[in-house]
Image 1 (cartoon, rainbow, N blue to C red):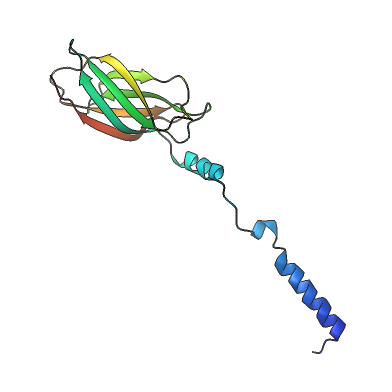
Image 2: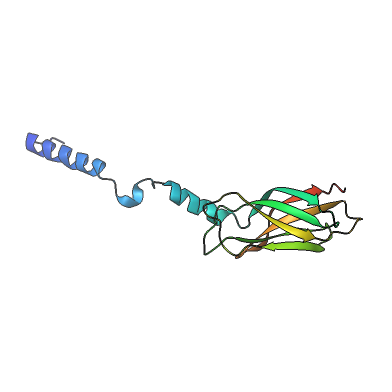
Length: 146
């Protein structure tokens, strides 16, 4: 098959135009940092407990400073509590969080006056998400009694 010179120029321009403008649906999606955070938010269902310190007060009760990480933290969804419990599920104390900590990640909050029986050697600390409930990475903490 032979093409005339003007036909070849026209075909060349047509193919060049087609390859230069890829349809939007065929283009690779672009990702911004905000979009990447949104994807991560949907993947993680619960806050993670990443650190905790327990100190025994003079009256025998316990003070806890617990550090949580919740990357989806917003007014619509945030870590709204952490609690100290035994391995069998007995809850000794809970710290309620009344707002998000979007500008403070991870964040640490304390609770004092938690009563723990003398025969309990370690506790489990877990976080709660206001949408998904209790779960995520927990921390088991050995209690150093005075």
